[in-house]
Image (tube, rainbow, N blue to C red; front, side, top):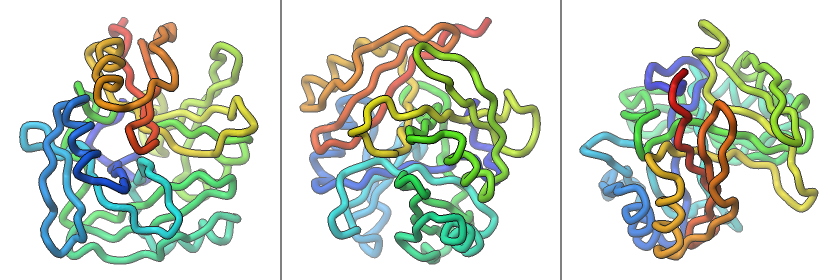
Length: 259
């Protein structure tokens, strides 16, 4: 289960780049009850989505030329500069070179060889999100890519991830874990093969919800789009996929009861 005791390779942050941050904040407030708090005038419009004062995600304006609205998953690293060098050496791309974010930490924005964008975070005063794996917070991340084995080999060079294959309806799914501890306890996400040749490689964040069907209603009335209606996945839970009003994709999961 995704927690907040972050180790190298674990998801530690998610943020949304949007062409209209005010409208995006209104949408996610309606769907998840999040409140947006500015990170300060020196941050160029960046802010923190909060739940009872705990940071659960972040939001900022689009900063890369030609970028589409999207969620970005950040993975913890002990050395952002080395992560960007390994990315380039292994066939990926450095979109934003490692830089300090005041005293909060050091980040680099990267793209894997198949085109999935992600970022790395070397913590300073900010270790990561304050809350995960509870209602309306991040619970899972998922990579959709043409060749999961090749993609995971790339990420292993960065983070020493482990993974385990499991059969899912119509596909082989890889459950990903960090390098440390019990493999099942250290799992945080998965990798799946693209089902449509027209799809692009990307990371998708999953938010835990109490009711996936009620989330459909909240998304629909707030101007979002239902990409995948709620469906039950045995031993996993009930999930659904959405796009916000500006096209940023995300998913929700109501976990199955613990056995």
